[in-house]
Length: 285
Image (cartoon, rainbow, N blue to C red; front, side, top):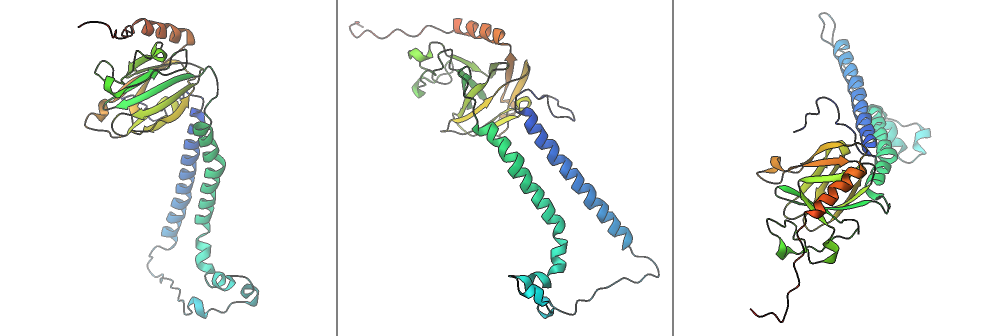
């Protein structure tokens, strides 16, 4: 496994920095709250510690909330009596309310807009690369639609160890399709629109440098996208426990220049076996 040490992994997609900002913001808020509460807790421990010759201070509450007289100014408002009688308890809730309002603001004004841009705003670029990712125990099958942008048909009866996704090579749309196992190539600076599914159990496609993680569900095709910003080789991991060999379900994400990607794709097309010839109904056996 890649060693990321104490820092976040390299940011290598267009939305990675937005994810990172949210992580840093939440951790900064957690650290601030921890320091404030820790300081207050230590202050109380010191101030009210047991000391020789100093009697403990006790506060008696002789009146129950129902026995406390409420000023007329509070009685005129809805729930005024309840609020006045429990004002002591309400004051103690002020810090909790401040934290709650901060969390609501973080969700409404940051998390939802960012998540919407990442998940709901799939690029409409005609140049976007189209890829299907079919997961299985314990491998990633990468299916490229090719220059025509059309995926060849897949048929379950054609699934074989040499044809892991059951691609029908007799389908004209599959003529320029490329299928890879545990190795995915993407051009830098070009959006890739992907459909993720699973052949068996739930998996989770995870590329840490892209800040991209999505569960793969059997029977569903889940859309996702990414636009790489840095050339390099990264790890594809499965982030969902999927069986006894889960830890071996790894692949390589290779980001190349457009020229390198085109050369690689042409080399893979040249290695595709010829489509089977249609059967001749008049042939004698």
